[in-house]
Image (cartoon, rainbow, N blue to C red; front, side, top):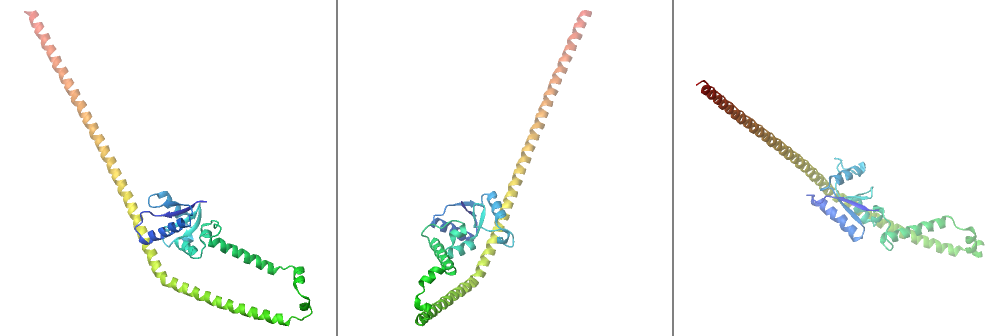
Length: 268
C-alpha cells in the first residue's frame, strides 16, 4: 500500500505550506513510505484529487485544498483529521497501516485487546472454577469480614474512578475551550487559503488563455507569411511568362522583317 500526499509545490499560502510541511515531516519521522503528488505542476493530479475527495469533506466552494492524504485510492483525510489522529496517537489507524511493534499505538491496541479479553472472561466465568475458588466458610455464610474488605476496596476504586473521570472531563473542557478560541483563526486562515487557491487557479486559467492566444497569433502570422510567399511566387511566374511572350513577339517580328527583305531582293 502506498500513501499519497497531494500538495501544491508553488502555493502562495503560508498556512498551506506549513500544513504540508507538518504532514510530510511527520511521515518522514515515522519512516512511512509515501509519494508526493504535486497538483500545481500536474493537472491530472489536481483533477484526480478533486474527484476522489468525498463530497462531505469538501468546503462550501467545492474545491478541496492541499494537503489531502490517500492510501492508494482510499481517502484518509485532510490536515485537520491528520492532526487529530497525531494528537491521539492514531496516525497508523488514520493511514490504514498496521502499527509497528513497540510503538505507542501498538501498545495501546494490545492493552485494549487485553481489557476486552478480560471483560469476556468476567462475563462468562467457568462455574467449576468458581466452585473450586469459593472456600467452605463462604458457602456456610461466615464471610462477613471479607465482604467488608471487598466493599472498602470497591469504595476506594470508585473514588479513584470519579477523580479520574473528573480530571478527564476537565481536560476535555480545556481542549474544547482551546478549540473554540482557535476556531475563528483557523476559519480565517482556511478562508484566506481558499481565496488564494481560487486566485492561483484564475491566474493559471488566464495564463493558459494567453498562451492559446499567442499560439493563435503565431499560426495567423505563419498563414499570412505563407500567403504572401505564394502571391510573390505567382507574381514572379507572371513576370516570367510576360517576358517570355515579349521575346517571342520580338523574334516573330524579326522573322517577318527578314522575310520581307528576302522578297524585295527577289523582285529586284
